[in-house]
Image (cartoon, rainbow, N blue to C red):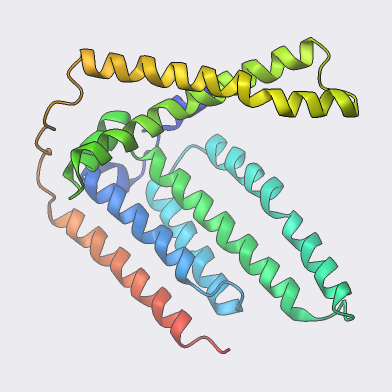
Length: 249
């Protein structure tokens, strides 16, 4: 998990990776917003979101293995919506009713597009690029530090969770109704203290290294290519707003 998380950052080889870090972050946020705003329950909105996500993937060019892994994760997480839609349609008395299935399809398309756009954006940023991009944004220094630490510690926390789960499975505490209930009730006392202890150690290390000193100035200024990329993203965002506004209700 940690290897995959760290290897994902900065592995893209598309033209977006050559833009200024703040432009990559803002452009990715704009494409993400366009996929969120587009009415994916309607055919034209779904096609628009898929087209925008594919264009962004082509512009970022993340490794195929990363795209496959995240696509599989999206399928596992989002396909159950179709089962829920079928149950809702059956409860409504008409299995052929299109609205629940259309809603599930819209959620699936929106979720997959947003997931792929987010991953593609991550692959264009190294850890140093992310820090430079966040520093350049007009947000308080404390917010920037907290956001960066959340990103940096995510893989470590996931690794700790897997270690706890493996230790529980090895000790045979993952079967049986009563055992599972005792496990769930005691998990906060096992997992949360480890997370808090690691957070305290991270905070002490940050303070020792002067991480809370005034933030550095951002890097080089964006050029004409950065402006052109942002203009295209704003155009896509405007199209998404227009498609949602004029979508039939």
